[in-house]
Image 1 (cartoon, one colour):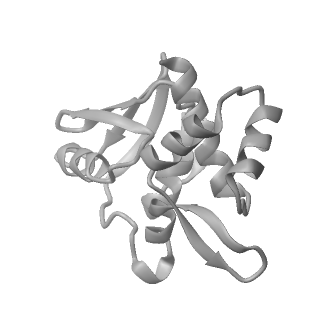
Image 2 (cartoon, helix red, strand yellow):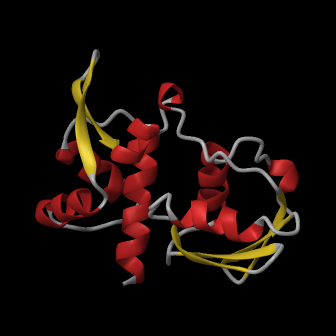
Length: 158
């Protein structure tokens, strides 16, 4: 299962960073990163990740994560929350400190992102345990939080 999660994260990273127009192009990029799979497996992965093809002025159509469409600033998709203080990482999980009374609302918002990176959260009064999926690294989680939470920066990461 870890192989699959690592592969899914690699696909997400590539699609986010590159303008990829075909499965063959994506398969080639994945093979350069050491992943070996069939076109059918890649097709299933793209479906699982809800990847769509969107028009592009240079390449015709390119792959995009449907979440990326929501990240358009015109859609105002940032979480309308404040109150986080810091985040620390241990054993692959993240512990977010918040102002007293803010943890449950922030955890609720994180859970409702429906992002692949976060498997779930557990909240207390001023602390949230963020449990990432297998294969998700600290960098992926920090990137998600920076794009979804206004005011979140590397200064908050311990």
